[in-house]
Structure formats: structure tokens, C-alpha cells
Image 1: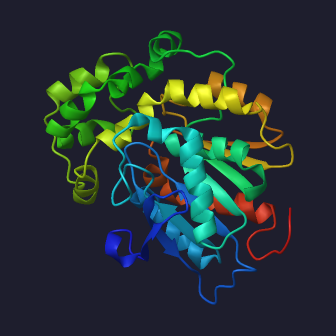
Image 2: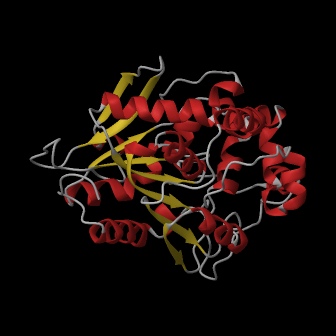
Image 3: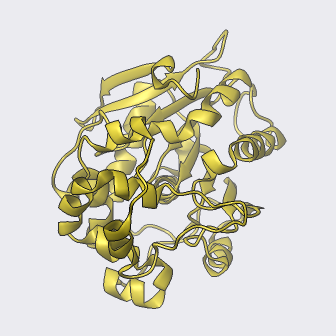
Length: 328
């Protein structure tokens, strides 16, 4: 497992019981015992893929965990339905459950970043008994809302989420695909030595940065993945009404399971992880541990790869993992 060589990981392609075919990495520890070794399932965000977890997979496997990392719907070599409705959280969570089934897992440790963080939070609501422990990175838990807020209203109330208006528009697909390398320069930028990165979060900022981008990304693997199409990844931003209607119809609770251990990791220079949202999320999580990583931005799995790997491993060690039987 060489983080510089994507092909060095164990790749699988499976059709799930939901009818969708997923590509995922499935890395087993030595002397793996399904009844003994816990599995960590990692869910990436936008616009990422399984490769976003490349620095964590090997160390966690060597510690005795089985690590499963899919390309989520719309990404890489996983199915890419064109309709935004297919990307609702209920549907995506059903895919995670089906992935666990395919891997022969009743339960797992679930970890998510960015959109993946939101997804794993919803998975813990839809499938509470399939989660041993939950780690959320960069995007704090937000409970289901009793009232639907259109993206325009969300951006007005939280200007740091203004970029979602652009991503949620249908025209963003063609604009980004036509300037994919420039988009990658903007979206994957990391904080500099002073903890500073260009702000694309406010309304209209992403459009301006794309028009003025002149640095060309060298991230060839990401370019290969994202050049398979941006409609699927962007559809995640076009599901807010579908998600709200489903959650309201299903009567999802606001609180996560009271006995569920939850870790939240975030970079202090990440404009999408505001202290106010983090404080709000704590009201709905009984067993929350919050760790801030100083002067790091949104892409903490790469920017702070060793800290993220170690923090999650130490947190799990405190819970008695790996290599324990039964429930917490």
C-alpha cells in the first residue's frame, strides 16, 4: 500500500443489493479474522474519491483493522446515475448498508469527511445498529430540519456556504468540466505556512476564482478520476429538497444514538467548519469528543495526515479497539 501508487491497493468491483455497482478498496490486515478484526469504512466528500484516505489506509490496516473505502455514487468507477434524485442521503445510506452486507459485516466503525461526514451522520440515523463508532471530519453533524430551507436562504444565513449556490446550479457541470484543472487548483488548495488559503466559499467567489485560475494542478490521479464526469459529484448539491422530504417522511430523530461514541476532527482554518455549527452539533450527540487541528484547512487527511491517522487510532484504542469481541 503505497500512497503514491493507487494501483498498489486492493481494488474491488461489486454489484450491491441496491442494484448499483461500486468500486471500493478493501484492505485486509494480516491473519484477518472476520469475527475478531473490526472494519473501518471511510466515506469521502466532494470532489474526492477513495484516494483521499490513502495516508490512513495502510497505518490502520497495520494496526489490525480491515479498511474499506468506496468511491461513492457518481465518482470514479462507481455507477453514475444522471438524476439528482438518485443521490439523496437515504439512497446513499442504503448503498453503505449494502456495501457492509457485501463485505460480510454486520457492524463497522464508520468515518466520513466533508459530504462523507454528513452521509455517515445520516447513516447513523437510518442504520443506528450497524455503527460501532462514528468519526466525522471537517463538517459537523447537522440534525434533520423540520423546515425546508432553499439553498438561497442557506447562503444568506451562512455566507460561508455561498459556494453551494454555484455547485447546485445545472450550469456548473459544464463550466467545471471545461476548466477541470483550474477547478482542482481552487478546490484542493491547502493552507500555506501562515494557515491561509484563498476563500472560495462566499457567493460568486468560486466563479471568479475559476475565471482567474492560472496554476495548473499536478494531481494526475484526481484529474483521471474527476474527468470521468462532474455531474454525479455535483448532484450531491442538488438534493436538498429530496433529502428534506425523505427525512421528514421517515421521521428521522435529531439525536444520534445515546451510547454511540462520536469523534469530530476539524482544521481551525477550515471556513466550512464554524465554531457555531460545532457548538450546535454537540447538543445532539451524547458521547462527543471534539479535536481541533491548529492552522490546517479542509483537506486534513492530507494536510495533517499523521495527526488524523493518530487521533482516530488513539480514540478507537480508548474504546477498546481493535481486536475486541461484542459490543462496546
